[in-house]
Amino acid sequence: MKPVKIYSKNYCPYCSRAKSLLERKGVAFEEINLEGKNDEMAALIKETGMRTVPQIYIGDFFVGGFTELNELETSGELDKKLNG
Picture (cartoon, rainbow, N blue to C red):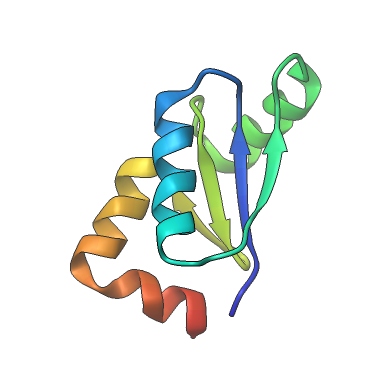
């Protein structure tokens, strides 16, 4: 299974939803909390173009946020991304 990273912040409902979805599937992930880390957040924005969290990677593939993760799950593509 490919490694999963979630960039998050405290009190972020979409971060919680993304983590819950992965936990229900039994997917281990690394969480990087960006609370108070403005330089790291700025670098991530520059890399992805997204200004919100969560920001999720499966291996080198940038998923996006919770909405995109959930769309992958609903379409059946998430397992392919995790295992492919």
